[in-house]
Image (tube, rainbow, N blue to C red):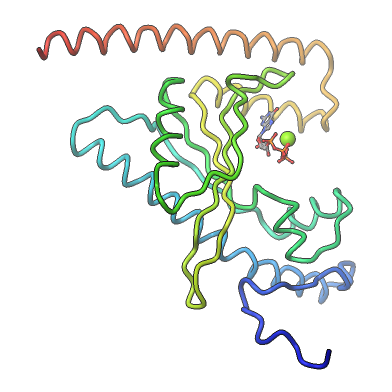
Length: 235
Ligand code: GTP
Ligand code: MG
């Protein structure tokens, strides 16, 4: 009793925003500000993983070695989406609850040309000493019911603040160009129909996913074939 637990770190200390009235402009502003501070380490974590990926890309470019990364994008979930998701899940708006409830606050997407590159990027990224693999969901080996394919990772990376390292979760989605093409269209359709996609479109999407999968196999085969002949001419 009596004495508090000591100073609360302005970025990582727990904040209870659940009692603030979101229907008031002032309240909404206060919650957004609290969340913006809470989001900072996640932003830094994105920067760190982005840097790792950029270094790999640049290294491969410099050495003339094959570069398995086509492109990388990132997004930090905004305070309003966090409020919405917490309300939808029915979880009180306390930063510690947000931390455990929403694992895609920091999101990165790596797009590769070939399926083998997806696993290569996975190995390269997780080989780093400061990266801990928290979860792997392989929707390539086991596609989702709708046809969705991608490799999903939850990585834990240390963000070094003045107070010391803070372990922060980053969601990394690694997929091929074909998988990415499919997922972006599926995402549009899903939201256009407010998550209730008509059966014939679902079937069309399944069909497109199968075609994308076959395209990936053919491209992989061609890729192996020309890499093999490259090696022959070099030797
Ligand atoms: P959320 O769906 O984000 O609540 O988390 P989860 O626990 O279901 O994780 P999962 O790994 O299934 O999905 C995380 C993210 O992957 C989503 O937020 C999307 O960005 C992407 N994703 C998952 N499934 C699909 C899908 O069927 N279609 C598309 N377009 N994207 C998907
Ligand atoms: Mg999901």
